[in-house]
Each structure stands twice: as C-alpha cells, then as structure tokens.
Image (cartoon, rainbow, N blue to C red):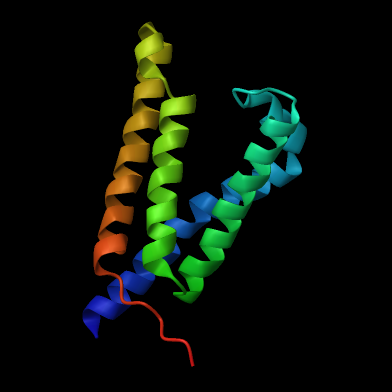
Length: 127
C-alpha cells in the first residue's frame, strides 16, 4: 500500500515538467521549431509535433497510470536525445558550459527516475 502511494506521488511530481514543456511548445511553436537542428523546415515542425505528443500524451498516461513502462522507456530515449541535441556542454566554456552541464545533469537525473518507473511500475489493468 505504502509503495503504491509513493509511486503515485512520484508520478504526479514528474509530470508537470513535461506538461509545462509541451504547452510551451504549443504556445511558442515557431520559436521552438527554429531551435531544432533542422530549423524552420517540415522536419523541424514534425520534431516539435512529436515532442508535444510525447510530452503531453506521456503525461496523461503517467497521471492515469496507463502504460507506465512503455511511456517510461519512450521518455528515457526522448530525454536522452534532448540532452545530447540541446545541452552540448562539451562545446562551451565558462558560465555557458556550466549552465549546459547542469541542464544535462538534470536530465540524467530525470532519466534515472524514469528507469525506476520502467522497471518497477505496476501496469494498470484494462477492464
């Protein structure tokens, strides 16, 4: 019982990050497309649409307890790729390197929590 409550609280704590990010991508779609490695192209737009689906759809699944293991694995890959593409601390020096390293490290911490969910979350049974 205690473990189940803790996992529910953990799911509630992790989702606002993805909800906020997904909504931000919707509200500032063009700005986010321009920040992709492909810029303002169809591929850049599709990347942002995919990110919105992953972030908001995954959040809905996490909050309801649906397909937690699958969503955890998708989020692990997504957060890792986001880190490598957008927080390349090894390309910077000084304060910018420190800032990018902190963001990269934060994402690794998120990944570690998602690994736990992927391994130990009970799946919600469909009726």
